[in-house]
Image (cartoon, rainbow, N blue to C red; front, side, top):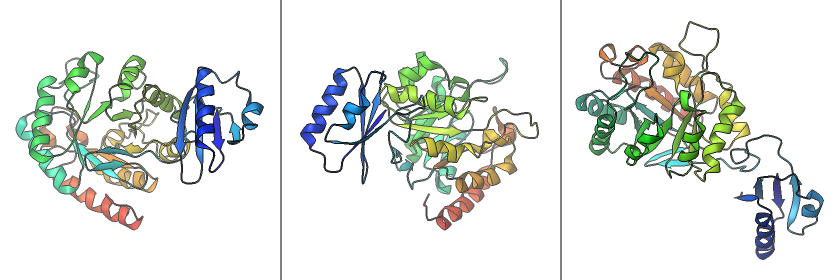
Length: 336
């Protein structure tokens, strides 16, 4: 349920209204826009008397929200949320790029890649320390050592770091990680999402392989419900019958998510395609569809990579893609 307040509503009367609603066990989310102030009610609103609310002299209108996600809903929060990480901004008119290898392998590798992607315009460095792999025999990351190497790269370049958490028991290890990534396989790990709702760090939430838009937003809702409003949604391709690509990038998800939610949306064309030459056209398509950022896999020697080398760009290829993305953003009146 949302309450639309009248312009210039008396502040004391509004506070009284909020207090009475909270006494009914409801949580009130206030959103002050340029022209309208909205109060979103979360909880059991079935017993709330809409007519009584409408009669309140501070209230312009009251509407019920049919979607199960509330805090993530644009109806509750009409203005875009902007998530800030260092110099990076995601959301609104802001656009940022995240780049780096699938997995952290050596100090030399991660620092070389970090320097290269920063020079090309990336604002955050990604790298996996804990890697979910389909095969139990595949390389699964350096774990705590990998996070330490990421922090060395951050110290060397100043780039904030993004890495994926696999288990809540590892949360303390992520205390110095700037953005915690929740991978596709953990999108519906609800206990993890609840805990991340209290961690105070930006969360990059990836869409599951076979999850709907509503399910995706409901996962974001778990984090938001815990009080953490720094959520970045990531479309990384879904599983379809098509076998020509690793996954199928759902371009329609970008405008749909931005229509239904105020949260920023980034796109991972590397995991969607699984093919290096497809990364550029998919990245361009994502920008055209309104994405707030990109996450691209970059490795200094893809042929020797221990994880996902086949889909990684070289630093030179990444630089070429970034030049074209910068030109496209400039044409649209946006900046990287």
